[in-house]
Amino acid sequence: MLKLRYLFDNRDLALMLLENWDYDKNALDMLDYYRISANAIYPYKQNEKIFFLRFTPFDIKTEQEMIEEIKFIQYLKEKGLNVLEPVLSKDKNYLIKKYTPWGEYLACAFKRVNGDRLDGFNSDGIEYTNDLLKNYGKTLGKLHKYSSQYKKVSKKSCFDLLEEMEYSWKNKFNNRNYRITKEFTEIKELLYKIPKNESNFGIIHGDYELDNVFYDKSSKNIAIIDFGSSLYNWYIMDVETSLENIKEELSDKDFNKIKTLFINGYTEEYQYNEEELGFLPLLKRLNELCGYIELLISIEEAWDNEPLWLVELREKLNKNYIQKYEADIEKRAYCT
Image (cartoon, helix red, strand yellow):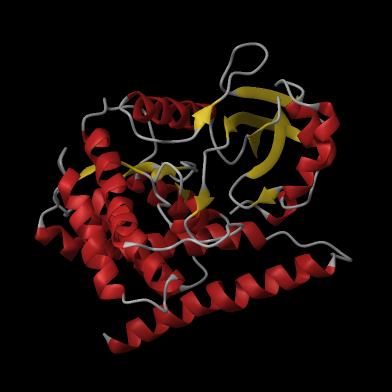
């Protein structure tokens, strides 16, 4: 998640960056449907088709990281996987770096994929058939199969992420909680002991959840969007993230049946060793710890006379995530 200062709708900034692409100037009302979380995303139209402008502050992601993300997406598309498609700017670049009155930004644009989000948002109702759920898992299996064949590139790994978060914990937050400092030490020590090879470790999607996968009812095709969290990690983490999200989002349905369909689809394309399931508790601890630090960084700044939505968001993040994580760490330490 971006720092809170970046969550404001900055229409002037969006328009400055959008000028680097062709767009319909008579359809600027599309910008009202913006979304800001890990990136700022503003929809726009060109020749009556929908596209998305995505931008992020230069201090959040490096240029190299975003270049590698776009290259990976293009590679998956070449392999036949249905993924979002990057769009060239006016000067024939997929990624631009621009100095603005609000700082330096990296921006790119993508075509909208066909269909509706699988979580049902803005759709006229999705029927979660056996074929659809199996295909959902199969699509992730294809992604991992192609990832395992992809050349090694200079892209962030879960090890790099852990190092970054530990640096912030020491230098921004002064190791202020002994239990958290100990959690860093334990995870770091155990992570390097997990077996890692070309078949179980590579570039994962990082956020393969229902809201990042679209389903086209007419063609029955599945499309994947938002590779902003992709990094080198164990493939099993994508599987676990997907199943946890299904369990939460489709809580009124038979999870065991859905899980079986998903796994059957996945294993038609890619295999994982049952022993890798034993990695999951540690990898989930890693995700939770890094997410905790990222939220601390996000909310650390505060201003006088903040708008109500910002006050409420800060309180929600603090209560529902930060304080909850700290309580869970204390409870875990007590139990051990």
